[in-house]
Amino acid sequence: MALCSLAQLFCLKARRRHRKEHPLLSVRDIVELLGYYLPRKNRDEAGVLAAMRARHAARQKDIHRRKMIQSRLPK
Image (cartoon, rainbow, N blue to C red; front, side, top):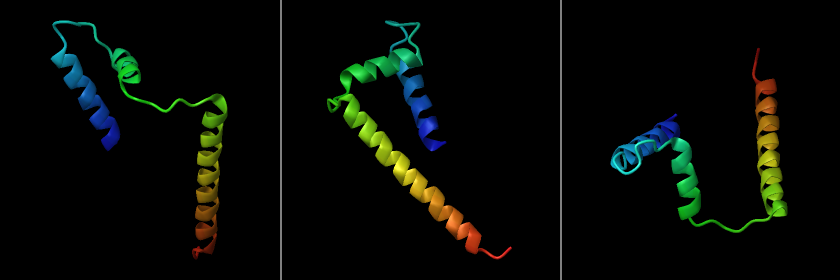
């Protein structure tokens, strides 16, 4: 929730700051501008898929760990 609130605040401030030059500035516009201006690593499809698999494996491991903890709790 905190990150969502910060993102909304950032967008609101950007829209207010630039309301005269760009009165119809939207969140989508801000996201596209950030994508252009912020530096990124150049990744190919294999790199994106590898990162996704690593995140999924970590999530699955956490799900399994939580199930094991729950099964050990008294009912």
